[in-house]
Each structure stands twice: as C-alpha cells, then as structure tokens.
Figure (spheres, rainbow, N blue to C red):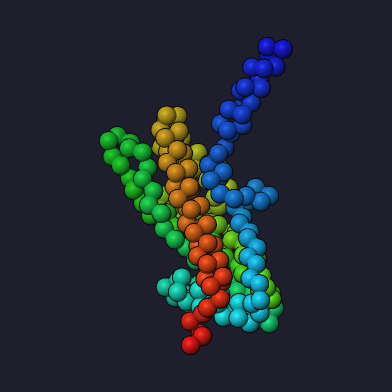
Length: 194
C-alpha cells in the first residue's frame, strides 16, 4: 500500500519531466494546432468575409504578401505570417547569446452565415542556429547539436527552460492574434464600410 501511495505521488512529476517543451502550445495529434469557433449572430457570410479581409489589412504589414487563400464563394481566407520573439540563451563561458526567433504559421478562416472557424496550424520555428524546424521536434533537433558543442546537462536544462519561456510568449502571441480577429469580427465593421 505504501508503495502504491508513493508511486501515485511521483507519477505526475515523472509525466511532467518528460518532454514538456511543446506543452506551451495547444496540440492536436501531437502537432501545434489551435481551433476556435466564433459565433456571429445575424452576420451574413459576405459581411464576415469583408471583416476578415479588413482585419488582415490592419493586422499585417502587407496583406498581399501573407494572403495564401482568398475564396469568397467557398468561404475560406488563409494567411501565412510570422512574428518574432527574442530568445536569450543561457550564458556559456560568460557570454550571452540573443537571437530573434521567427514563428511562422498559417491562420485559416472558414466562413459561413452566423459563424466562422479559425484554425492556426503548421507552426514552424526559424532560428539562426538551427534554421527551420517544427516545434514538436525541437528537442530531438537540438539535443545532438548541444551535445556536440560540449554543453553539459545543466546547461541543456537551462537552455530548454529558456526555450519553454520563449514558447509561452509565442503561444500568447498566437492566442492574441486569434482574440484580435474575434474582436474585429464581433464588432461587425470593416474598413470597406463607409
């Protein structure tokens, strides 16, 4: 009985100690994935389409550069965009390295009368030391490189703690983008209405 109680107490700790890096993100089938249904009572598909396009014009520096799909008839608008989060690696030999990590993703908006479905997926991290990599594979992608650089276990643990903090900031940015879109859609206005 004592063994069972001790095992029960340590099971959550063991589960948390496993690869937690990507847990900062919403996951589906072990891939970074966000989905939100936004109810828009009394709004027709055409008005919602105008609002999504208007939001895109305001949300991105160049909507033309980020627009991946734009089909009013089938009701889909998709944007591929990135944002930057500064990553500060732990000090090694007294030197701190900082770099801009770019998080690329695709935001899809499926439209119909009275509601939309927003999906963010295909999140890709671009960072200067390792190039492009999927969020889900960062540990396997970087572990070997860190070992080759002779980084000790303590450094690697500090490194991954910083990565997790960076991921939390990226998660907050993705959620803020979805929230911003939802707010724009619920206002029911677009720059095309004058």
